[in-house]
Length: 91
Image (cartoon, rainbow, N blue to C red; front, side, top):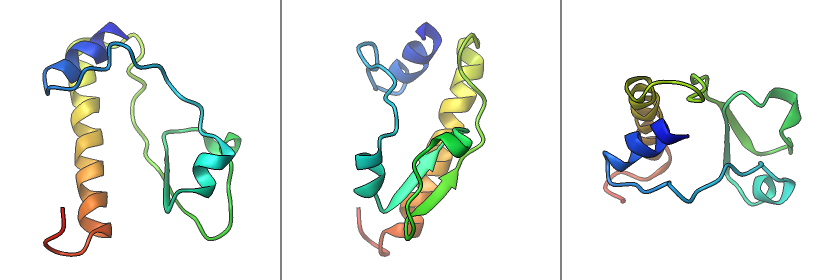
């Protein structure tokens, strides 16, 4: 997605060679927190894991300005999760 590549480059992240990855059973087994973005029942679910489903707009076909908002929403959610799961003063 060229708009996503541009929006991420603005914050110093190069995703030009990145491709979307399917959430695998092994990835979920190894995770403490599993974050999905609208995959619903198609994502693997295991007891004892924490699941968060972040409702975000699909950046596909969106303008760079729209993708910036999505990027910033994701950053806000990630920052909040990091603050929640890391002890105070950790990085």
